[in-house]
Structure formats: C-alpha cells, structure tokens
Image (cartoon, rainbow, N blue to C red; front, side, top):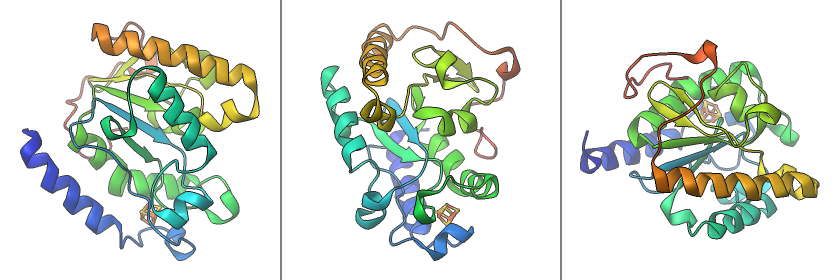
Length: 212
Ligand code: SF4
C-alpha cells in the first residue's frame, strides 16, 4: 500500500479516535492522545498510557520522560519528527493507574492494531514492560531489552521505559546502550536474529484485526 493512501487513512482514524468512547477511560480524560509522527515512520514507539501532561496537551511523551526520549533520539541523530510515538491506550487512566486488561484489549482492537497496520514501521519499540506485555507477551523487559524479535513480519526491539531511566541511572545507561544498538539496527537494516518460540507467527503484516 502506498504511503499516499496511508496518510488519509491515518488522518481519518485519528479524527474518529478523538471522539472514542469505546472504553471507560473516555469518562475521565481531558484529551485523547492518538500519537504523533509521520505515516512513513520507520520506527514506532509504543508506551503504556498518557499521563497528566499528555492528557492536557493531547500529545504523547511531553513530560520529563519525553525529554529523555528526545535526548536518546538525538544521540542517534533522530528526532521526533522522524518517528511515530503512541501508547497502548490513548486516554489517561485515572490517577495514572495501570490500564485494565479490558481497556487494553478494547483500545488495541479499536486503534492500536490499525495504527500499526497503516504505518507499517520497520521496527516496533515497546517502551517498558506494560507495552512489551501487549506486543510480545511471554518475555520480560529485563531479558528482552536491546534484542530483536520477529512477529507478524515486524521487527520488535523492546527497551526500558524512559521513566525507568529517570528513576535509576542504571536504566538510563541501558537505554543509552540500547539506542546505540538501535542505530546499528537501522543502519544495517539487518534481519531479526531472535524469536521467542511462542511468537513464531506467519500472518501477513498488513492484517488489520488482532495484529498483536
Ligand atoms: S482508551 Fe482507547 S478505547 Fe478507551 S476511550 Fe480512549 S481511545 Fe477509546
């Protein structure tokens, strides 16, 4: 599918998402946070859920975690304008609680799978354990960060959530190292090298329903 035809599909999806009331998170949000970035992004970051700043601005990763993510991108000569950033759920859970499994399922079925199918990124990067559990269940962020996996034709490259890097210097160092690996991965455009046995799946990557 050409990216010319993907742009209107993404715009239509975002416009519909802005009025979504498919799960209970719609009742407490200020703004839906669909995601930002170009439709032809090679990299798609997926965090957990919008926080207070994101809820107010309607954009993902605009607080301190976002600044660290910007710095990490800059360290490998990328910036926000060249990557797509979104979350597993698009509305802020009350008091920043974890999204419920039912909320995650509903938002993924309504929006996340479709977003991935439209953008077709070369590399999907789950940020932290919650997003990892959605995209690549059956492993842990401690074991999988900085490694490449293959699923549904996508390369998955899990890393720690930037918030972890803000809390502890050792996670920040791991993030710095993993971004260096990401740069090499992008440069080499190499094939994924590792794959959990439970995710040896052969479906087409432009499948729109239940991608993950
Ligand atoms: S979290 Fe997702 S499914 Fe729930 S209301 Fe927001 S956009 Fe809709």
